Amino acid sequence: MTATAEPSSTVQTLTHWLNNAPAAGQSGRTAPVYNPATGQVQAQVPLASAAELDAAVQIATAAAKKWRATALGKRSEVIFKFRELLVARKDELARIITREHGKVHSDALGEIARGIENVEYACGIPNLLKGGYSEQVSTGVDVYSIQQPLGVVAGITPFNFPAMVPLWMLCNALACGNAFILKPSEKDPSSAMFLAELFRDAGLPDGVLSVVHGDKEAVDAILNHPGIAAVSFVGSTPIARYIYETGTKNGKRVQALGGAKNHMLVLPDADIGMAADAAVSAAYGSAGERCMAISVLVAVGGAGDQLIQAIQERIPALKIGPGDVAGNEMGPLITREHRDRVAGYIQSAQEQGATVVVDGREAQFDGDGFFLGVSLLDHVKPGMAAYDDEIFGPVLCVVRADTYAEGLELINSNEFGNGTAIFTRDGGAARQFQFDVEVGMVGVNVPIPVPVAYYSFGGWKASLFGDTHMYGPEGVKFYTRSKVITSRWPDPASSKVDLGFPQTR
Image 1 (cartoon, one colour):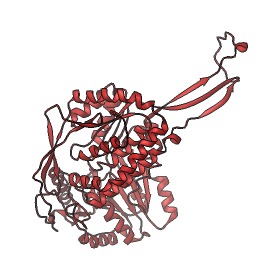
Image 2 (image 1 turned 135 degrees about the vertical axis):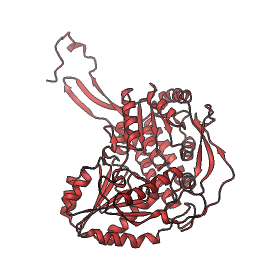
Image 3 (image 1 turned 90 degrees about the horizontal axis):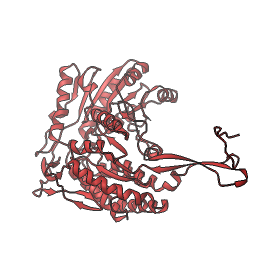
Image 4 (image 1 turned 90 degrees about the vertical axis):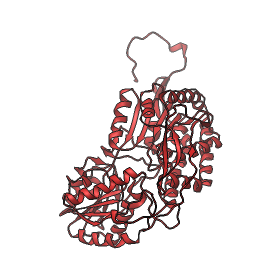
């Protein structure tokens, strides 16, 4: 396998985004942004101080008051126009994603397509914000409910989906009438800037959307700032727990999506070829850097040997190389350190008794990119680091189980509960699985069950901290709060002093 990409000799200096325009960093601190396919630094991103974050909040607070008062139809019109601009320029955005993240161009386009679904959902905000109305709950008294925006809200997004995850958050938030501060990953920050420019061109008023780059200092400033009402986060479980605990301690509404260890249960009656195709696609797509990647295949009964053989046969055909080279199916990992960390799990699995069927460390690549071949580990067991930890790389672990019940117990006893899948021809077994399994998103012969935009995304257990899932109906709920109004219009003839508690009869 070879991997070649042209190194860049130009190092760009990036900016924040305030008041619909680029804003230079003031802290003096920066971080390198790499091209993972070449290993070269291609940009420097500013790391905001708490004071810079505070300035963004002040801008957003002023803008939120006017944006909240903007008619629903006008807000929807801005989202519609943004959608049209995004569709027209999606190839340009995909190239930005590939350059900074490393995923292949087709995968970047797929990420954008799923993001566009969420934009389209938010376009229907006039319908989504309809309240309820009850007439004559008491004599001459009506009661109705309305949904109102929170004010200034923030999103802290991960490196692995630099366009899709921000779109999960900010489209609903903006459509509901909030001002939004986006803190993207400092590893691939340019997609966020591109989205901000499109929103400006779509007519979003100054200050309603800000992009503030940064590291832990910026994150802590978001969590501690009294002017921010809510925080959405996607990332690892330790950080998600920290975000949730710190944010809620400061009185904020928080949804924090954490890590995953997604299991795919394959029953003996499954179509082995179909299951193998699905396992390879879901385990190695985007170099395994997906929170919905299949990282554990649970083979029940006699399915194990057949699956190992079928997967092993498919691996040599995978094309690994720079994401901007046509035909490549998997790119590099995000950083050199992360690549080496993933490779360490292969070594530890071998030392702890697993069988390394395919060793990704043996793949050879040209240049200094952060590439690693795909790995297949058999006879993996709980207690091994490769099983217990979220590897977040192109490593598929196969665990053997004698029965459906044993396989189900493996899934339900795992600390994570993000996504899972079952492969079978038995409708009864599939229905029982969706009833039994303690996981937030379930696929039946679908390996990556990411819900469509008009449902909501979110796991259980250590994969989610907070009470609401992301995007869809629960996303609208997260970015609004209910107000109930009880109204009676003056009728002097029936007015009197009454110290009793109001009754509805």
